[in-house]
Amino acid sequence: MSPDTDTVALLQRYRPVLQYDSQESFYADSAAIITDLAVLRFGDTGQAYLASLHPGVTVEEARAATGFELDRTAEVTATPPPTVQELNLLADVLAAASELTPASGG
Image 1 (cartoon, helix red, strand yellow):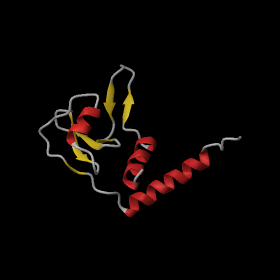
Image 2 (tube, one colour):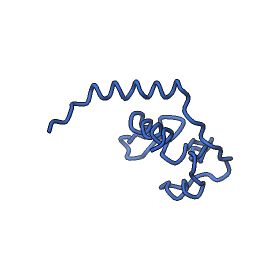
Image 3 (cartoon, helix red, strand yellow):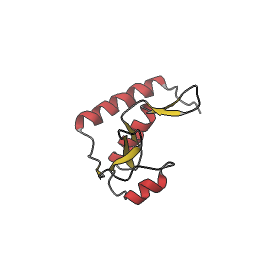
């Protein structure tokens, strides 16, 4: 995996953006859904759209991998690489998580 893909995977694992409410419907509690292919955001109508694509991913691939219809009117940009500050934050999160996870014994 490239560092960009690793970063996205970490964001997905440690900061989920979708929750399941008591009325059995999904709602977003954040401004974006970050996947290993793209970043999705929500427009004024609440419909998700492709905001940016990660390196090497096409619009068609991202849309095909999404389980719901995306708004097609927004301009899609390239996802910028993580900053040094973001990478350091992720490293801190991983270090803290590894301290909380019991070691698997053999």
